[in-house]
Structures are given as structure tokens and as C-alpha cells.
Length: 608
Image (cartoon, rainbow, N blue to C red):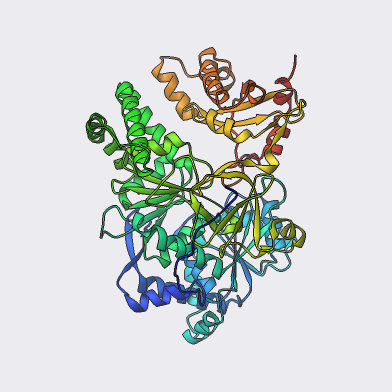
């Protein structure tokens, strides 16, 4: 199949702007809990719709008093926290445009985005961010204001706007239309300088309202309970931003968690007890691997692996029945599943807060087996696909018929088309307006309303999309063989000891790979085998470890022809990091930067 359209839902056309719903909800039900906010002592407290409206209004007044006007661009550089959402809606209330900046951005990255967007004011989280911008502020003549969250800027702005009349704010708010620009989000720059995607209030309303109307039933752990989610995705990324907007519009109670580490995230999942989460595959991999390591430490590796196998087979049988190609789980399998639910699966759910029964995943491909395991363990994951240019999700697996290993069907009102060269094209109300100050890139990406994504994919006979790679990442060996590296890299990464894998081979005689290690998993592996701790330079030469990684490479090679297989690999002592400029903030590999940084190691892979 080359093209598939999901019929649009009968939704009211977007009107006004994103901030209107804050005032509408407070008027309709002022005591309903809208958000959870973590106090300095670590206690979660409720924020009602009326409280949130009052804070948004007070902050909007302060911004006006300090000179922010309709159409101004204002940057936010921070981790995911309550104040980001507060500033988003206050700025949207007065018609300003938000420019998100990743908190890990370098001074030059900050300079490029703030200069390109002609930002007139910026909000930063702490002093280090302020110092980062200070190093380039002499080259940003249009930047007039800089506020710091950890220095009390919210209260400062409340006080500054105390004498501004409410009506002044509402006049600004009423001037906002669906065509007004809500935000300029810069791409992560995997293939060059970041480009500013111009997204409107209408783009976000279409996206959020469609997702709410189609997937709202999966937001609850059981029928009739309050929907809630913990947002730990970066709000500088379009996925996190869409979650923020959809939660406010969809009356989902949500909280913010600024750290993705298991030591910080798991306790907050326990305390907040969300009914569903939205995450990237990395999070689900971490939960799974932590459960596996815990079982090994307790001497229950065998039962755990058996439980994994049962969960996968059970979910696979349920999927087959849903598609009319199987009878469903057998009586024996159901009995095994019920036993392991008490012994294993309930503990996996408990680690995620205890109430989660569904989740949505995006940002990169999830392994089919991992998705089946979580489904079998009682957490149904709906995988989707999208870009910044499509305001997050363009496709997602529907609630009633998940097809594991795919990114689902187009969301309602969106069309997916597969071009002659295999590129995925999208069209719908969530597609962006274009790139800021870059008509050439806009013309190369938008074609009569179609968004050329740069991704390669296939559509099956039911309209389910599978992403097979990136056009610009296809490797061509010196023998003329074209190889999509993604499928190989993902399979190697499935091994619990592997953190990252990058496949190389462009203009080379064969395919090879650089592999980095998950040091937490390696420490556990050494302990379980009675091996002494080693420094990284010794570790990468350990023959037993090399055997483990070789197994991962052999497993990956079973997916491709001999000409496309990984012939040799090298284990690196340190992982690729964002700080080194080797990963994007959304954890994607910067291939050219990695190959340059490890040019010597790459050359060694091809020495005869």
C-alpha cells in the first residue's frame, strides 16, 4: 500500500488560542485538580483549575508590565518543571511566541537559536544557564530581559504586574487565533544547523484534541477513575510539549519530573501514581533491565526469563486473536500467565507506581518483543511516530488493534503517503507552517501541503506504518550495497550490556560497528560472575565481555543478508554523550560527529 488516510473525527474547529482553556476550565469547575506540584520538601500538592488560572493571569500581567508584547518571541531554557508550563500558558495568554531551549545547550547553540528567532526576553532555570547566555549576550542586541527561575523571577513578575488590569490581559488573549504562532521549536540538528519549526496554536489544538478524542479511554487505569500522568519528557521537545497541552485541554492531572534517572524517576512514579505515561523506548528498556537485574541478584534469573517468555507468548496470542488469525492464549498459557502475574508482572507495575495500565511511546522505534512483554505484564504500550514538523504524533497504534513492531496508523485526519523512493510523506492539520527564516529548507520539505519527513517506511495492507530508516543515513559500501543502519543498531542495543551502537561502512568494503556499554548493567554483570571491577580500558578487552557483545552482533546479522551484515566491531570505553556533542538532546546519534570524533577507531576497523 502506498497511501492511507484515517478519517477525521467530528471535532469542533479550533477557535481562539491555547490559553483560553485555562480560563474556561476554571470558570466551569474551579475546584477540579488540574496539576500536581512538588514542594521543596518533596511533597506533592494539588493545584486546582482556579489556582492555575490565577497564577497564569498574574504572570501574564507581570510579563506585560516588563515589556513583553503580542508577537514577541521569548525563550525558555529549563528542565521539565511546573514553572515551564506556567510560563507557556502565560505567554500564550498575551500572544507571545515561546522558543524552547534544551537546558544542556552550549553557548553557541543558545546564540544561534536566540539570534535566529530574534528573541527579546529569556527565562532560564538557574545561574549556570544565565552564565551560558551571558557569554554570548553581546551578540544578541535584541535580548532585553533575562529572568531566572531559581532566583525568584515568578514572584518578581507577579509583583511587577500587580497594578495591570485584568482586562488588558484578556484583550491580548482575545486577539490570539488558531493561525497565531504559538512556538518556534528548533530541530535537534542531527544533519546540520538546527532549524526553527513554526507551529501555530491551531497545530497544537488539532493534535491534542485528536489524540484526546481517539485515545482518552486509555488514559485511565480503570473505568471512571481520574486520569493522571507524570511528565518527565523534556518540554523543549515537541513530544513533551504536546503532552503538556493535551493534559491541560483533556483535564488530565499531571505533574513534572525534571530528571530521567531511575533513582529520581521511580520514587516520583511511586508517589504520584499516574494512570498512564508517555515516554520514549529508553524508559521502558530501563524499567525492564532493572527488573531483570533485580531478579538475577535474588537468584531468580531462570523464573524471570520464563515469565518474560510467557508474557511475550501471551500478548502475541492476544494480538493474533484480535486480528482473527489465532484462537488466543491456550488454557495452559493463561494459567502460567496468571501465576507469573502475581510473582513478576505485578512487581513490574508496582515499580511504575502501581496504577499504570497503558502507556504511549514515541521518539524512536521500540522492539516488538519489548512491547509484547509489557503488554503481557499488564501495561499496554501504544507506539506512535511523528516529528517536530508534525506537532508530535502523526501515527499511533489504535486502542482496539495494536500491531506490535509498527508505529500504527495515521491519527484521524492525517494521510500517510509512501513516495517512490520509500520516503514517508504526511498531510494533516498538525503539519507545521514552515521553517523560520529558511524558505529554501521549507520548500525542500513542504510540497503542496505534504511534509516530506526524511524517514523511510512501508505501509501494510491495513494502513500500519513501519519506519525502516532515514534517507540521509543510508550507507553505501564501496561495493555498491545500500544498507539501512537502524535495524542493525536496534538489534545490537537489545543486549542488556549494550548502551549504544553505531554502524559504519559508507564507501568502505564492508559494514562495521562501534559499541558502547551500559556501565550499570556491566557492573551487575561483573558482580554476578565474580569478576573484579575494571577500569574502562581493561573492561573493553575482557574476552568474556567481547563474547557477550559478539552474541548481540550475531543476532543482528540474522536480520540482513551477508553483504549487509556487521563484519567486525569495536567496544568503546565511554558512551556517546550530549556534552561531547555526539547525541542530540533527544538522545539520537549524531553520526557525522561520532565518526569524526572516533575517526581513528573507525579506521582500525578496516585495517587488513
